[in-house]
Image (cartoon, rainbow, N blue to C red; front, side, top):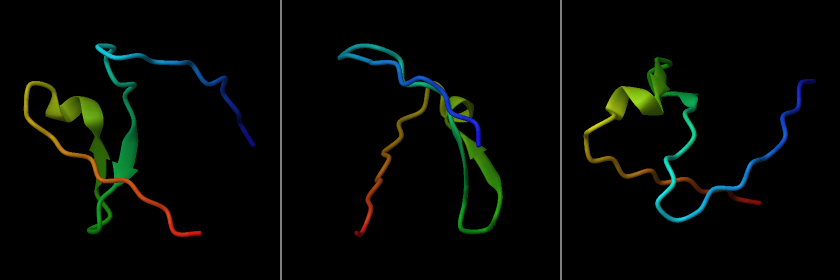
Amino acid sequence: MTTTAARSIGAGDQAPDFTLRSLNGEAVTLSSYRGKKLILFMWASW
């Protein structure tokens, strides 16, 4: 398992780039939406 150190970000900082899979299985990267409005809805159910 690979771990990375968490870095803190603050107000006004650029969000770190990441890639997720869509419901269709396609890889979607945050940086591909640069310059566009984007709403991220993340949640977890414990």
